[in-house]
Image (tube, rainbow, N blue to C red; front, top):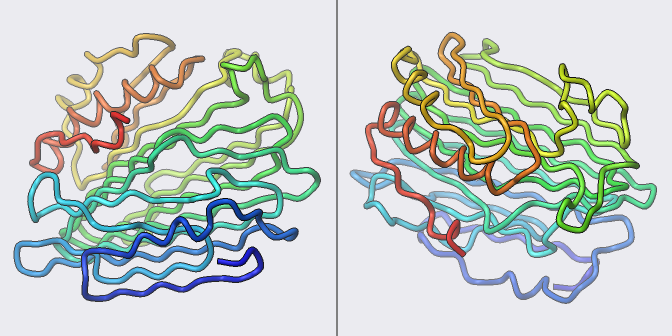
Length: 302
């Protein structure tokens, strides 16, 4: 694909998408930044949850639906060949899960927000889950480089008795390189609603080298933070207690319950410890809310 062109891929019948990611490899983004869009619709057909519709423009796509645990749950890996979001980029992801269907989405590695060079970037994610359906949104962490300038929105819309489990994990700076988030901006918004009524909403306005990061009421000096959210019509107190028995190997973790929502929070300096703790909590929550044993995506082991 040429650097200044857009591609459109649509497939309403097959569970496979041709591997076209290589068309973007080796090509620089246009000077105005990538404009990438991805729309996925999952449906229940008989006993099988299928990826019934997928459309993309620019470098966002899935290659195929996977079924490591049988027909009931459709797994998919979201691919972004540029490997990160640079200044001027605009990404939009829309996922719809139809009645009684089940889907699990993850990513092959950490998302990256690169130095912006004066051009803000944005990512807007909207997840819609119909009655009787379930969606597991399990991306790996988002890494904010020093000098990034970004806006990230995650909007989850649930209908009826829909169920949702999702990760939202952030790393400020590249700790392995000794880099801290000293310059730039990162604004994040997270919202969960059921039948149009808000269940959970929060936003963060992060500024490079903000002295408030050191406050115990904010990050306490931590560079890695995030939440696991599990939404269902009812969250039993015993599930919260079971999750509280799991502790991260580094950093701090806490689990609480709101009406129709379980919230697990992490704060520390170790993204790997945070990922492993979220995965352990997910392995407890999933059987309780979805009546399925944990089936970790194999991409997590690569």
